Image (cartoon, rainbow, N blue to C red):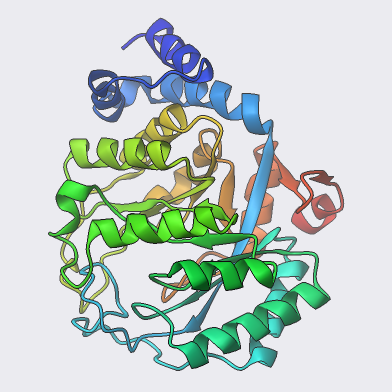
Length: 339
């Protein structure tokens, strides 16, 4: 595929037109020799909407393990034998302390996740109180990842000032039943629509590297575009010992970069975040991921560790990108922290 072809793909994306399936497959199957051309074209789209700004998100696993779902990728599921910390919902004071750390690291969004299918009323009420305490202390956006949510629950989240709710589709509708049997793909879509109905912005993406086909990756991107989600985290499967997908290893850095390019072309204006597995699968090519994507997690993930926050800041600075504040402005003072 030539540079002109990739430029044409970028032009199609910038015009708001959906690239067709044949083109999407060509993006995923392009040879390594044109990877830099592909990244340059994706960067045209990224730069149009986001300039050189990078958003940082900080993730807290506020309730770990003890989950009754059977998601094959997850170390917290009921079928997992992974050795992880398991604990009930953290006390409000510990959650606020984690938000303190998010603010210290210049993150614009504090993401809090809890394990489980859906929170009980007791847990949900405590989550709401914690969110109110964070909002009272910090100028942070809050993203809640709480499992399946009803209309009334999303309305209550909106009432305490939650800015965004994460609920990933994870994979295509066609592949979903190969990954999980305790809830359906449509259950996940319903939660996203409940979030949107409450006036909260939506965060939804997926996990790649789970034995899916190229068509499944394309279908996931198309579905997220149709749902008009705001923020799109792309996770790269970390095969965790004790989970059914422990022996699956389908990814390499170039494949991951092509997937990020595909999502940028299909979702041109959305925030695209390189999420779990960034350090494991992109490795030394992590900075190149910032050309199609405009967001990363800083710090650790749910049950796996990320790289040192200083290394993330240095990577952003060294590549010529800048940090975005919660209000969309550029943070200048982080440069002294980074290098």
